[in-house]
Image (tube, rainbow, N blue to C red; front, side, top):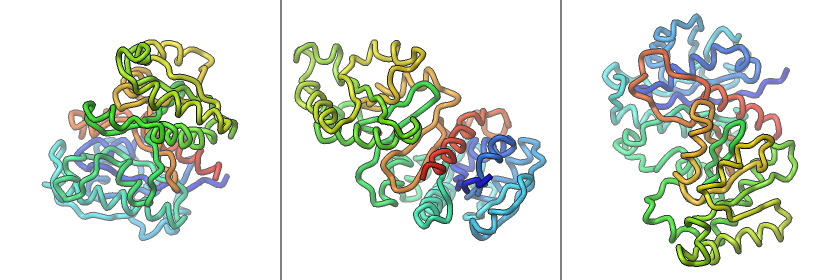
Length: 334
């Protein structure tokens, strides 16, 4: 079988990233789906192998091509940092580790853009450490959009039942209403429809759009964003032939959205917590993050660095496995 090569960024070496990568790559089902290439630090990855009591062997490579034909008993590592023990202390990310994390992500994106790998899957990072190192991005999504020179991008979190895309991402709640425009909502609908289609057998996905305000604004009593921006965006999307419905009141919508069979293929939420609280209630362990609209394929775990679990070998690799599996599936559609 032609297995796509997936670049897997190690993430914060002081968190669970290295351990969940080891656990994921110990699963025969994951190895049968792809050829992995880990981008990270040898000391941190070797420590994770020990913590996880893994029989896998770590082998340093200089390129994706060198890793392509290695057996499934090894983890190929593109070594992009040589951190000291003090820089990989569990729960204590440093400026040097923050800079290293940035370089893992940047290199993986470059390999995707040049076609040397088919996709990238990312382990969790410390945004604070990256900021201390001088890389000022709210998260992976915004960094990758800049690296890919892409303005039309959408952050979507997904599980087997729910897929939720966000009109606004990492924004203070007080700033959200001013960012809800017809243009931004319509862009999110379009990018979501295009990005979700490969996961739906390339048919037109069914998309639900949430309101911003309680009770959809209650005819303007609780806000005008629905009438001013959200409804016009839905109408415009429908006129383009997209299968879109809404706006729906978020307080009741998700009760129906999780019924079987699922009535919608994706949900467009107006802000971070509106969409991701219900998503994580349903998919806390198996949810993943997919950045839509990029010229490359990028998936990620839907959780943080979990410093409280780092070094125990007990962190769940379910989300990491799902990220790699979906990256491989999307790669097969291109």
